[in-house]
Image (cartoon, rainbow, N blue to C red):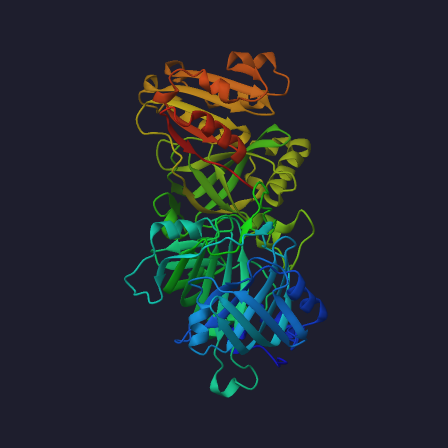
Length: 616
């Protein structure tokens, strides 16, 4: 089927996202071929151990399926450029069996090889379907084929698992508006880094010749948790930067239905979902998921959950390689409502820079309106006014992949402390090598220090004003004095600087009630010793404080006045020496491996554990 233009849904989504002019000029619809090129035919017939497909049920709802033949390669044949023959073994509960029984004719599929990030889409019609017991043989007439880029595919190695024994754990093909999915399936979705998105396009009466009805099947990938569940029945899928064709979202715009198929690659469980779908763009999207430019919300109208279904398993002890293109997980507005205060039209002007080391600095800001910040909370800043909005790129050079979805928004823990609403706050941060945002800030800091040092104390003449998107976080200092163990990996010390300031400031009430052990592991021991010293206010003498600084770097003698200095890194044995750890509230902040080590050493000791990780 040769396409002669974009259908109405694709045109609508391209216009909403301001892609229309570029896509019309490129005639991107001509990238879709009416037959499979030789490399696609070889790929489908020789490289695939499974293939996700979309078919319609008797009500016209799309459902995803995972077809395979016991996880073996070569279960698909392509005798000619417009034909695929699939010899599959049906899983119990897979929706395709009922759909074919109800006369499903349209089909779409996705050939995807997770080990190489290759993927090629196809669509067409079911020419013949023969089934006997668990065997299903499909002859597919393919009239649409297009290759897709490797972005967002997480690399994993799968091995055949022929002894799989599917069990239908839940089957609700009809879901009422009062139904919700159980918590363990919400957790299943939240733990997923991959989903297969099925869509349908029903042609308008006058457009059937130009753009006939068809189905779509595609892949969406990200970091675990990138897909969120709202109100127990609506699945929210953010849209990341892609090829701008808007085929999947265009289908949904024209025909508001979609399927979502989630796979547990370790245990073989599969969750099949169908539902009513709606795209949201711009402010409407951000009202649901702050920071999202576009998203699709799928309200579940039916689902089937089958355990032990996939005849493949992720190979043990082989780590998943995450796509470098995937941005940080974005949470729903409803998820952050209790922990985050979103702000409208509040700005933060840079007023001062203190350079502690070439790559560690404190940036002070003054806000346009008073804001409330509890010790340990973070500030969310929009820095697009400083770094600009990037132009569209389909792919990026190695090491720059994350820039494709970079919205210029960053989150840093506030290192200052404030007893009441304030218009001033400070952020202590470390430069990320190659970071677009911290690189810009530290370039300014180093240039001023070298050429205009007098501006470091008052940077207002520079006129740098950023958007303050919000303040939030539940990793906060307890309201009443108690015994604390604060453990930081490097710049993870920033929330603890705020906490120390809060309990030792002139406004502090009852400093003598606090008993604090602070442990910092850092490459720059002198810098962090000075930061801790600076954080201690006039009531510090009333505070029971014991500081340990670990580092592999040389230990300056000046540090010993504020801390016990240790060579190397803290380990589980060190934490065993803290006799009263079980009676302390433990706060841990640092890189994930560091946090995991600390929490592993303390788990089971009776301590109350809180963590606040940072990951770029």
